[in-house]
Image 1 (tube, rainbow over the protein chains, first blue to last red):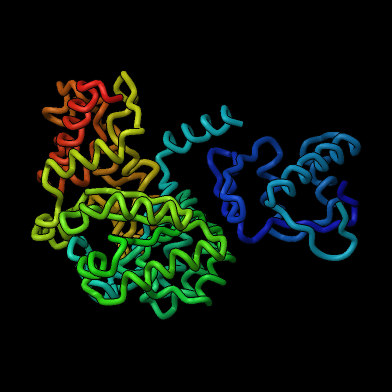
Image 2: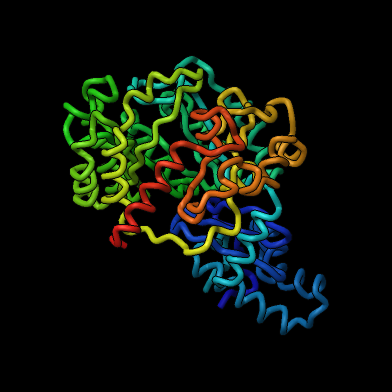
Length: 97
Length: 336
């Protein structure tokens, strides 16, 4: 579970490319290929810089016109899957999983 | 996930963007392999050129780059090169003889999105290997590199061109790779040199040796009963190459420049070059005798080899024809 004040960003050793609106991500650590669709590409672009979890949830709420609970739930699931695949890392104070 | 990947893979191919690019970063080399297509000289893009080209490749849609030469690690600025390529966001493969790899290189390789590093090895003794490379001590140095990269947890494999000179060693090379715990990729293909010279072809296997190699090494391959959906590979579609001079090629094997990345945007060249458009629309019927060939489901035609060996990009390739006939004989003898 990511705390609201946790700060996350893309792992710098991930390679990625846009393919017809989806994002294809390749990791160095596991050498697996991942495909992000839906709101994934937009979040991935924002994660180029460290982002507070709370700010990402607000972004989802505003961009996709969903309520706060839904935005937070979807975000938690998304960040959990990215973390599991070693595509993101936590930085800065207040980080927790 | 499999369905999503299949759709994405189809989208990549349909988009005709250079998703996977072989990138030649020097023509210098510290070895003198008897069979090599590379004509050594000092041609080498500057770090600024590499950064420029990296940006253009990114905008064109490239994700995978295979860095090669010459010998990549001949570049004194290779650490800076790897940093630039890594920071540009590419998934990197490297082809190298490994003889010049040092600890600082290994540390740098850990920090990029490294997918594979292939080390050329041509024998299991210095007698055989060094005779092919023309440099004493190269077997020890390349072997050391394989073992060190494996110890460091990096994705190393061996690649070996099988020639007349090392045909008797190919099984031993495979066993050595197994002993080291690495994959071994073998290939009997020798291309004419980049300057058109065909003297290197004298090192090719005899037809009987090639047949033996195919039947032994490729025995595990299965071939579809129907011809593939598309006759040609991804050259000029999802696959391309950039030379040390910045020339943009449909593929590293097909040395016909369609533009230059230091003078043009890659995305514009890839979209508009007439040769690339022709490659994308080409079907079996455009390849002369291939139109009526009954072996197309066994054929792995390479338009690059067809051009280099037989003088016609859009024609049969004697190498592919020989391989397809060999497989047809093999299958007919019931050894599937």
